[in-house]
Length: 161
Ligand code: PNS
Image (cartoon, rainbow, N blue to C red; front, side, top):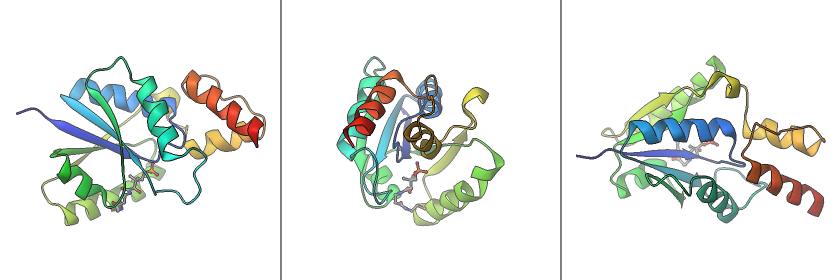
């Protein structure tokens, strides 16, 4: 039986921490679906379509990585896809409480789905999409922390405003 994992998130925007987790997941599981949450944030910087398009472009060469969008409950999406595993990244202790709550709630909603936590490489352990947006919008350098395509798209967004 092949193992399908779902890596859900807002990805607004995709960071190199996400990229690192996806690459690790792609080595561990037969297939990994990056599931972009359509309505996780009230006013995202990038539309769902943009977030999917960027992630697809970044992983175009990795054949066992699929990128999709979902709305509604994550466990319903996981069940629809017949996946066995939810992957989440854990950066620091501060992530743990929120992740623990989500994992246990998801287990209560669907007992057969396991959540697996993976740690990104340490150089990405402090990066978050929220910090990237804040630093970039205030003129800070995010080079090396996000894929080049994300950096370019951030530049386009910010100059268009
Ligand atoms: O990248 P994020 O914002 O930390 O991802 C959070 C996400 C999208 C995984 C979470 O908000 C989610 O699962 N949303 C779908 C709705 C849902 O199932 N909520 C209950 C989670 S216990």
